[in-house]
Length: 155
Image 1 (cartoon, rainbow, N blue to C red):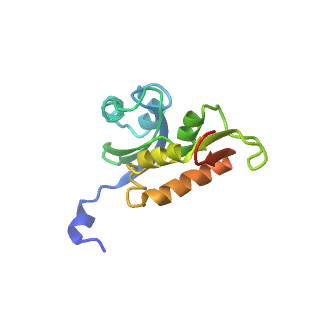
Image 2 (image 1 turned 60 degrees about the vertical axis):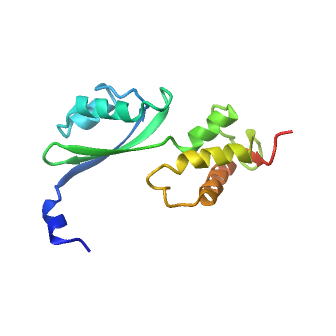
Image 3 (image 1 turned 30 degrees about the vertical axis):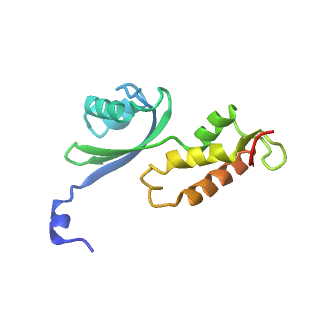
């Protein structure tokens, strides 16, 4: 239950915007400009903050960002690490998954790759309370649906 002070200090939300922006590559051009411009948000402030937060990632890494725009033209945003599918494709060295997962194997990865991806995903806001084992199982399920076979060790 919220306290009275929390309820009175809440700011009315104008919109929630979801974007996929390359790490360190936020510019006021499309797709960022039009998405934030229609809610009259400060484009340069977002670009500077986003680029500062994502400078530890390699350039052109697709970062998922959720922007909460308030009615008083202010905003807050959370940055998530890249998707599991992106990490799996990079680790396997493939452009896309299998066209027929379960029948055609696109590539193979080891459990060590899965563990490393799970460690990176553990820093995500939605995964921070999940165990490393649970995240690893989720990564393995995603790999299975992409047609990537998980083995203990590569031959």
